[in-house]
Amino acid sequence: MTNIVELNGVGLEYPIYSIKAQSLRNAVVNMAVGGKLLKNGQDLIFIKALDNINFTLQEGDRLGILGHNGAGKTTLLKVLAGVYEPTRGRISVNGRISSMIDIHLGVDPNITGTENIINMARRRGFTTRQIQARIPEIVEFSELGSFIDLPFKTYSAGMCARLVFAVATCFEPDILLLDEWVGAGDAGFFEKAEAKMNDILSKSRVMILATHSRDLVQRVCNKVLVLNSSNQIYFGDCSGWDFANQRIIENV
Ligand SMILES: Nc1ncnc2c1ncn2[C@@H]1O[C@H](COP(=O)(O)OP(=O)(O)OP(=O)(O)O)[C@@H](O)[C@H]1O
Image 1 (spheres, rainbow, N blue to C red):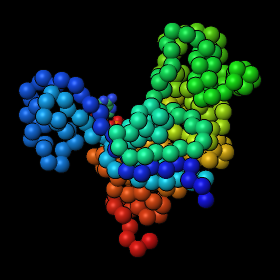
Image 2 (cartoon, helix red, strand yellow):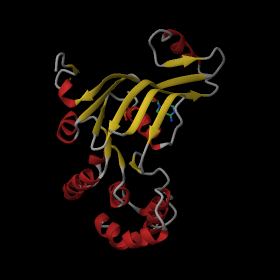
Image 3 (spheres, rainbow, N blue to C red):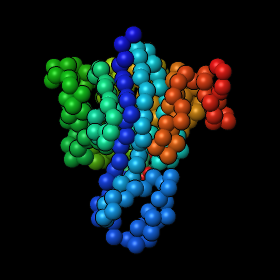
Image 4 (tube, rainbow, N blue to C red):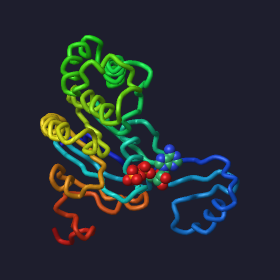
């Protein structure tokens, strides 16, 4: 079976330039073993966000990424989306990606909702004709009404999330990347969003969801990747991971 997503030894470090604060420099020295902060001998400090990540996903896979705050979940989604180049390793993604990683990524606050729909859809590789045909559906789903013609900066956080969700799920991507999308919108929208998710989940070839919710992963995913301080501690079927005790189940 063809691999839709394949990562081999992927690592990523964020460079932090010219750290002058003595307290942080001391902390770096103190964390020399096993810490995530690295130093290059000058004033350049790196934060190791991902280290040696390896997995493959095939047609129909739904991957949940779990891990504590700062484990590297969002960074991994950004690498998959092509926002960041990995510092090490190789990544191959075969298919059209739609991501809901950072709801403000690529959104222009000074233009209207409709203009932002067009921009977001263009970045996903759709033609003007395809986009125009979908605008009424997106506006209806987002429930923004006449706000759609007002600048994006006038929207509440929930309204922003609804519009981005509506665009990201309207075009039926091959690969859907989600970062805690379930927090978006109010209770009514949540139910509608979940129904929509189930619909596009059944149509998308691969879904990757970063979340803190073990229940959600068990409910909607067949595979799980567990990160701990930038390292991968488990990748495989959900049946091989003990979600309650957070450890690998031996002899599955
Ligand atoms: N733009 C950035 N510049 C520098 N360091 C960053 C940047 N973004 C994230 N990091 C660091 O990279 C590491 C991984 O962060 P990331 O946001 O990927 O974690 P996460 O698992 O998504 O966390 P959370 O659950 O809190 O959202 C953290 O140590 C974080 O401080």
